[in-house]
Length: 435
Image 1 (cartoon, rainbow, N blue to C red):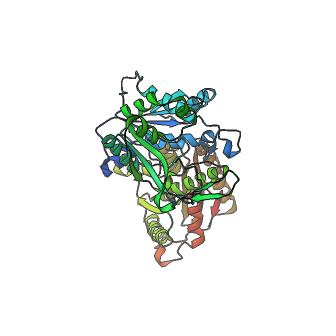
Image 2: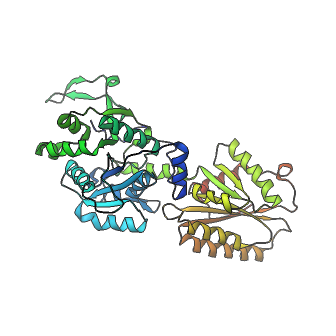
């Protein structure tokens, strides 16, 4: 049975959505490669009645992006997936095309859906056999997934794809979180199932292209109208018994309105799990970075990567991190931060999710005057306004240290300062901090 239970375990740290070379390096490091073409079908024609919202849940925005864009990106970041077919209601075709253009999705093919889930999936599978693009080939394996399950990682997709190629079909399962009971026609308990013997069928599911095509060619009008389980069609019409694989708790489905808030919270938490601190090679900045790195680890907060600059091999941090802490020492120099904004813009890092820059300015001379503070704050606000147009959030922290001394032997940053940094990385910042 297909589970719609939104109360399943929520993942604490689903994978981040890397782009560009980060996708390739992650793929190669993990050794996750396939020697056969794989494509994906995302049925996204639902009306989202259970969310109680006018907008179908797959198009509901959070953190500046519609839900379906996060799901598409989960598949686009996997280098061995060649095409992602998104099946939408005809009236939403224009909306989906706009999403593709706005967020620069490269592997998506939009197909009009049918009146039911199975009709929509059938349309998507058929479209894969009709592709005329030079780079597209008929897939060996088709992965079917829900457009409203945004948290799926490459490791599990690899398991599904390889098992589907070997067995003809494969699907994710999860333990039942509630006991299933049967009722009488009068509304009384008839019997209950022994929960330990049953599992919830989840997405993704994978099939060889020939199996899923044959299953839809042979299924009945009743199947098209009332069926929901693709694995059952493969068994009934092709004799293909699917390999069932225990899935991670990240496979939960956005079903109700509260799930949208949960998804937003998870993505915020995920994006805040690492930060890159840029010292410029300055002694005071390096000393502060060492203290912050130890303190963050002790408080189980953001993992802090420290680098003198983002040149050469260090440029990988532009692709790996979403949060950047730029430490500068007197004089006040906005051009250093402007350069970081330009670098992020060049990598398109802020296109899919907001990037965060925290500018930590170390004042090592006398306490700045009120007028100087006002001038610097105004310059920061202007720069932050410019950055926001590029989906980059800029915040400033001023640390006044009269002399260039080692931070270990002076007043260390307190927990309030550290948690303020973490809140900014998590998307819950103050506009300007002066410490």
